[in-house]
Amino acid sequence: MARKFPDWKKLYKDREIEDLPWFYPGLDPDLENALDKFGISSGKALDIGTGPGTQAIALAERGFKVTGTDLSGTAIRKARIKAEEAGVTVDFRQDDMLDSTLGTTFDLVFDRGVFHTMQPDMRAEYLGYVYDLVNPGGYLFVKCFSHLETMEEGPHRFSPDEIRDYFSGKFEILSIDDTVYHGTLDPYPRALFTSMRKPGA
Ligand SMILES: C[S@@+](CC[C@H](N)C(=O)[O-])C[C@H]1O[C@@H](n2cnc3c(N)ncnc32)[C@H](O)[C@@H]1O
Image 1 (cartoon, rainbow, N blue to C red):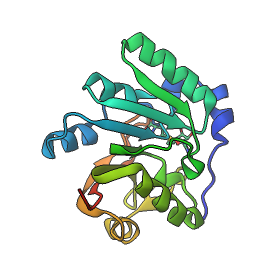
Image 2 (image 1 turned 135 degrees about the vertical axis):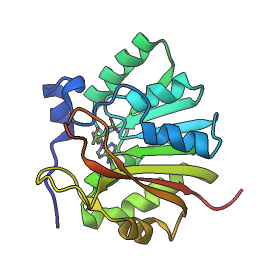
Image 3 (image 1 turned 180 degrees about the horizontal axis):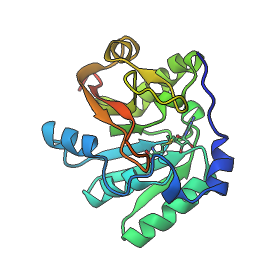
Image 4 (image 1 turned 90 degrees about the horizontal axis):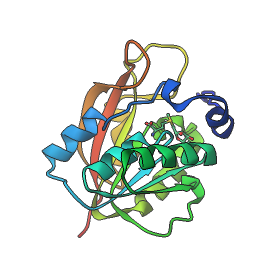
């Protein structure tokens, strides 16, 4: 089933980033746990669909060399201001991950809320692009809505089995955790946090 999504470029022009449902000012607690669990403390990181840039900024504060990309140029401009205020360097760039011009690969890629906005017929394409962005032996972390979330509006939802079906052909699935999508909604929506590794290296 296709779900409706906002016009991302218009959304970031019209709204304050702090009011968006996915705005979370610190490092996502699930990513924080995963970094600790897998002993990842440095490297080149990419935050795809960075939006307000909070995750990219939090990773830079932890010492990662970070790139943050988004479809929306306004989001990127606002994220740059946040990074400047935080006193960290992030390479923020407007980029469509389905037609990326980055031309480089990363030790860690974080997708917080992009995969679950892909319509079903775009998911195979998404997988090919995200695979190409991760270094052999590198990590991919994906946070998406869970099939346990019952709110009517919002992105696509996935069960752990569906996540396995999509990603296991390309990545080794390390864990799929039941969690919530931290942001400005009350209560937080139910979510899945998937940790994966690209074979090789
Ligand atoms: C649910 S928001 C999450 C934003 C951010 N990751 C966070 O957690 O705060 C999804 C984001 O993905 C971006 N996006 C959607 N499709 C994209 C694409 N093809 N390439 C890059 N960004 C995309 C949107 O502009 C939006 O900022």
